Image (tube, rainbow, N blue to C red; front, side, top):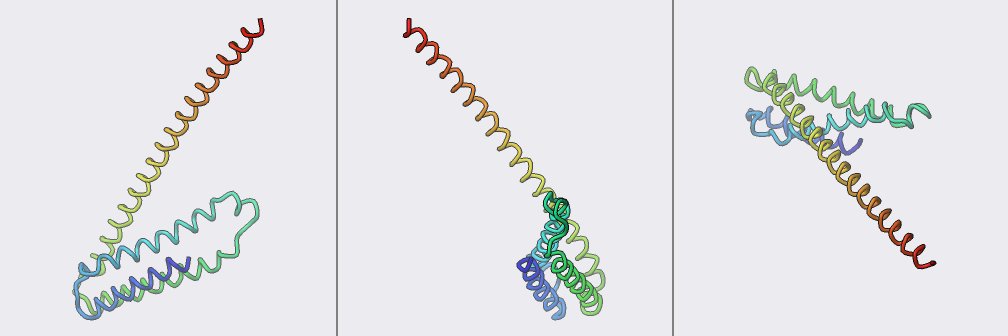
Length: 153
């Protein structure tokens, strides 16, 4: 949680300084990507916690308040960034930022879905491999057992 907040703050510092100095928002796209990634991972962690079996069985964890504080700090920084964009940058910069952010969110969602598909494919291959291996071991043990029974005669 602290890593995500630190990544967001570092990206925010670079973006706000660049915009305050009159630079284009396109020059700091890497920092914007870090900000979006940090915020998304923090939100994803919160939703995973809420839907986990442990939190449903034992109640809320102690990190909920810290997570709330981190998300509140991010919300405040976004508000400050909006005002900086509207005051110091050329018109439309905030809308450009929002469109870029939306593209990054879609891209990250597609990447996450692709990772899930790849993981599911690997699990599928491993399952089939284990089933084939168990079947072959079963046939081999059946063969050795019948050979053993024939040697008893």
